Length: 249
Image: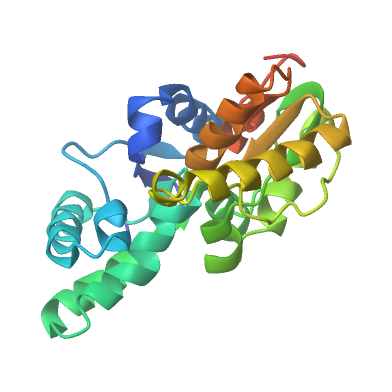
């Protein structure tokens, strides 16, 4: 494949999807297959290093980044089901190696070919039609790194508009933090709990059956609060919606 060839994509599967929500990765593969895009999973990939970086462990983050370089060196295009992990590669990898010229070149090269899933479909492949069908009302949570860091907001909505039977109901403050923030939720549980309660209130006000997002970390946090409040709203990654057929999940 030539550099920039959009018919092949290396899957960069974030830790939470790999360990807790493999159905999201499987949904990504089904969507890409329907679009005629060959996807593959490079062996040996691990955490991108974001937890270490966010907590000040720069050397550990560099070690993860160097491993990422090795694993994805031969990929033309890298696609990830996470805005925050994509942000790590695109923005923090160059910061990590800003004083190391040779590695900085590699960091920029990786950053230039790494995309969040919805961003890849709309801005790279330029998908205009999907054979997806879900008879349900959904609302969208815009995660922080995805929206503020990558500027991805319209792309998920444009893709959802292609899903037959789906009704998008926008919630108030869709781009307000859900309170997860990685280790933020551990260090500041009271603040985190208040934020996710506000988020759940906005979700419930829409009357939607599903809350959809592009980061399973945020959706896991929201799902936990919904469950503890005995609410029936379910969480779905965007890939799961786009992979839906027959009107139901």
